Picture 1 (cartoon, rainbow, N blue to C red):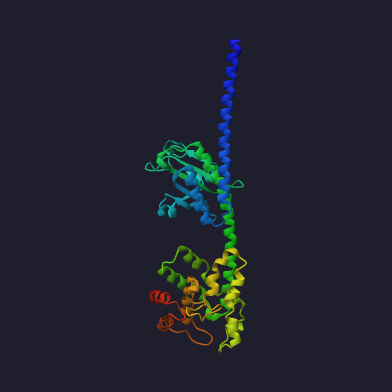
Picture 2 (spheres, one colour):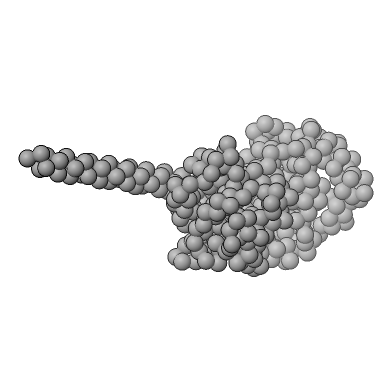
Length: 381
């Protein structure tokens, strides 16, 4: 009887231990599934590649308590791994660090498509010559893979408090890498589609200017002038980027204006002026069906509005005119004065600068006109 009781107790103990192990395993898998769901929600709907990579870095930092993170992507042309987003990495390294496929830990992971946790690089036979003795000796590197194709890697070093990386850290980072790879691939594809649209529309602008010899190069020059003004005004990065990306499209609506009017050597009739003044609205019609290009609407629609409310197409006044449009109003007028037109010769720089000063407070925002004059003097020597 005693032996039977001992056997029962022993068996019960084994069952309890097995159940405990099973519970721990289920808890771990539940946490992994929750993590996967959270990562998926965070990343998969983000199509802006820069914002996406920022989210990836933030997510890794939160989930692994890591102070040094690099997300590297394989450049399609050079086939090199380059850092595209990072935390705890100097700007110099971000610009200069690159790996061939197979080179270093990152290159090895990119080639093999396998995650790796190295607790001491100097003692690792495979990676002993990869990291300088002065650097941290432990790291995790996981691939960004889409359909068996590696598009980049995530590398982490320096855990908070000098703690060692664990297998759980490797699992978490591998999970993030899996979801991030899909999101990054989608974002890159979306970016390619955007670029295709952008290049097509830019080509249309160039084609239009080629048929209108008096304005060849006008769009690019105006963008350059607008950028110089915006930088002098220390505008936000968002506004600077807006001008960089879409500035050359400010006159895209002229595609819909007959060349006989655009190139007319004589004074325009009232009806012809009415047609000319329709080009901002035509421009908006061209870009409004393309979601990412809707950002260009303030520039395209409002760059002919005047500070005193006598512009077109909506006769907006002062603060109702978007700031970037006010800048383009000045930049566009300046280039127009310095360019030949069918009905007149180009004015000289001195005349144009005086005109900007005299029209400050009427046609132009006085603050922007003042800054523009300062900028144009530098640009034109």
